[in-house]
Length: 362
Image (cartoon, rainbow, N blue to C red):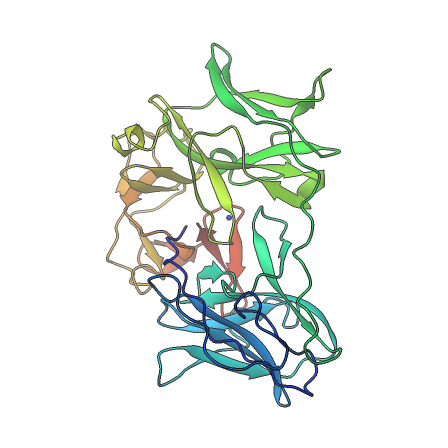
């Protein structure tokens, strides 16, 4: 449900007088309406150039890493393929898109997997996953000011770090929410499997038995409407959607330095699969079922059916630990070289081009 963002360089912002929408962001402080031209660079590495409205539509520009760049937003149902940007001679990526008057949320999608805000556009709105979407307003007088960022939701109280006791790990959430559940790699990111209980002081808690390992998790408020990282966690990582996943290490010190040491992964119960488990050694993929051979195929290995074989364990499951760079990946298990299977223990999935679904790991 994990990227280093290059240091930002404010990009080129253009105001086209007489055009609907006016300035879309990126102007230097104090730049007046009707001004066009380069904004002096203030930081070392380029990241983005903001959107600008023109007679042909709204021009979205991305400057930074990426072998491919697409535009996703509520104007195209958040499709990662419908609106591809084209690379320009100066190295930027651009797309001009006709939009009806209105307010739209959007992000850039790099290489089909990595979601990025428009770093040159200060207008934002909180997304449901603990991050933010960029916002563009179409319509109105030229030079209309960019709307301010949406006010944050009711602030959560100070976080409480997970604590390990004889009964397991106790997770605590202090803040808004009519209901709160715990979702993470330990339960396949299930939003209902681990409900938390509200205490007399307003805190929500859950104590859960966990085997040694390194786990990503979030709190889920109001049945999945809002996902929140744990403000009490000592470590977090990018979730690939512009937000953060919290990190818990069981069986070691939950600090970034200690997390580099190998941590034993929990054994999958006999006859049952287990959602992908992130450990310092890589992602542990587990398949449970009848098979003479099992391999792992995904966009990380060009869907090769023989590159990543799983090894059969004493309990009958098949496992493979694979190092993957930060990102979101689609995959399937290939049984006996011919039969393709989704990961039944992992509820995260994405439609494949053939009318089925691939499993998804972030």
